[in-house]
Length: 566
Image 1 (cartoon, one colour):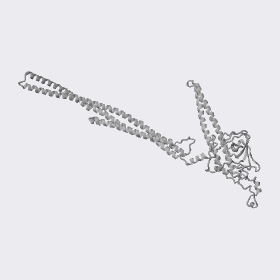
Image 2 (cartoon, rainbow, N blue to C red; image 1 turned 180 degrees about the vertical axis):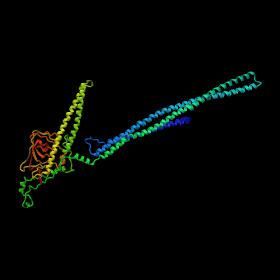
Image 3 (tube, one colour; image 1 turned 90 degrees about the horizontal axis):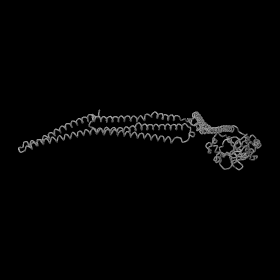
Image 4 (cartoon, rainbow, N blue to C red; image 1 turned 45 degrees about the vertical axis):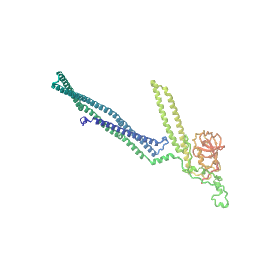
């Protein structure tokens, strides 16, 4: 149904309708803009949420539990989901909102052009009508004047008193007015014919053509709205498969949670490699008591047998090391804080090996990267040497030298860590053997030192000389200034259990170690526990750790605080 034939007289209503259509299109464009802003804000809030809960630490420090890894996977999937919401907003912005605003401007310009043409056609028709109306009015005036002149001529012609000249004058006036009326009649007829032609042309050609253009414009606007409705939905539907994959990834992450794996990771993370401590020895403080006759019936062991079994009983020590080390014995006891050392010697053997191996692997990757870069620079240098126009070979030499220096540093670091790793393996082996001996080999009474070292001769001092061709490289001890506060309940010094002579000098650069000179004599207050370090006290009273391999140790048989195993 055509607007030109059916609505030929509704120019003003069509003007209002087309304006309403453009306003409606812009209102829909505003709706799309607000919707994409919601999507943008939603995506931004999701990304901020992911960023807030993402781990702040490096990957090495992050827990490896499946529950944590699954949560991080969910965060990654949620971040991808937020990215898809941003894609939706971008699609709506470019393909819907942007297209609507561009098309709205085109519609406004086209509508303005068509309405201007309609107004011009109407103005031209109005001008034709005005000309026709003017000629009509003129014709009407001339006819009236001619009638008046005719009446005047007839009156004078019938009047016997009128002179001949007056009659002739009235007759001439009558003829003039009649001629002028005929001319006005012809002009009016021409103007009327012209107006009728222009009016037919206006309502049958011009107006239908303009209204048809307005109708086409309005129909295109309606089609464009339908297309943008579909684009609006397509922007959402296009990301549905990816969003579904994100949700499937979250479900897969939930299924990947493995409680057994997490429990095994706890074991791997905190396993020390040590065996549980053995039974505590019985401390016999009654060996020095003098027995009377009546007491003899109580004692099951004669004095002679006691002397045969060993030397006179040790002196009682009210401050026995057992009371001082109680914090180390309980499973949930207070644990002293250990400083973080470069070789990880503050860690148990098992954890130390893992950390060292991890560092060696990382250094190996860095070394391979530097070597690849070195090879690439050398190849580039060869190309420059063969083709000087491509570049200056000497410009690459500083970078090559720097890379070679980095390679040497990394190799040195790897060698140093491999040495520590070998030392950690030996340390763990010694600790395992020592724990095994403590658990399965029981020494006779009176033949153990306070730390459980076994003596083969009850009448001789126990000598443990350690002569080496050269000083070895000991590991770093784990001294902690807070360890003594946590380990002992009082400030009394540890009892002396022997003495030693320094075979080599030691600089004692690490915290908790002693500086010793060759041939210097020190007191032994704590034996080597399998980690290669012995605790000693200098003549000045300063205490600390010294490498066991650097000193010749002599343990006293009846040292203060010695214990007897039963």
